[in-house]
Amino acid sequence: MAIILPSIAADMIGLAFPWATENPTAGRITGGEINAADSHRVGTILALLDAIPRHLHPTDQKDLLLFEAIRGTLRGALENWRGASSGDSTSKLRAEAMFGGNHPIAALYQLLRRCPDEMPPSHIAGLDFIEDTAGRRSLRADVATAVSAFHNGEFKAATVLAGSVSEALLLWAIRRHDQTAVLSALSNYRCDNNGRPRGDDPEAWDIRAYVEIAKQCNIIDGRIRNAVHLCADYRNLIHPGLAQRLGLVCSSATAHLALGAMEAIIEHLSRGRA
Image 1 (cartoon, one colour):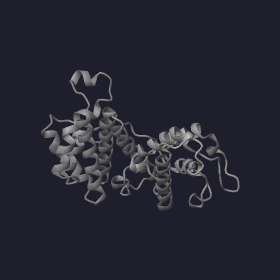
Image 2: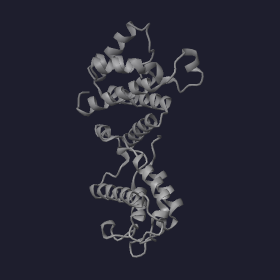
Image 3: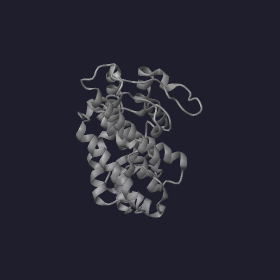
Image 4: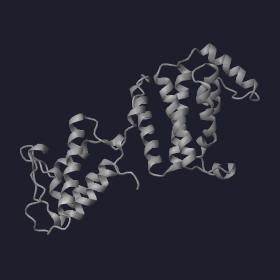
């Protein structure tokens, strides 16, 4: 099943139970009673909740507890409704104190609206080593999009975007490294690469130059170098016609390789090894 974003689940709640989207009165939405006749709607919402990836779940501890409590309540209600008549007064979803006095469906709607649709998984969420706030946010968004694309079966997007992040991180690390060492590594690389790249500005280099020069400068290790080289050719498949000319096809495997290389670079740089 494709991954579901929090906003999509929230939109479905709005379609199934429009009253849940109303502005709360005195901070609460008590809503109407939901019973077995609504089981198909509740089941759909629960299925969407189960398809939201963990890294898009609430990060605040209280919100996460509320999220799990509501999910458990919906699951329990469906169990109780199995075989029950639609008029069963003993099994209804109502506003409760544990949901802040809100109806659980309304509380869930409010909660989902607070959740971001893009966020990197926790183990690569930081990028705190990048001082520039705007640049850090942009890369975080790209990481999140690459991961989401992979989980959604969009392997070309995941491969290309992960390669783009790797390239940006290597460029960042090379720019902050000792430039005398960088130019020396560049000279050595040109000797092995027919004098290319011609210019000294790293902005004009490609990902293969970045990875070789970064390795010579000990910015990355041989493991990361090899990982990046395995997916370097796929980095530029965003250009029309290139995939056909090179005979390359993005797949789950190429996406795995690109995401793995990206994560390895992030973990390496986050430890201050550049």
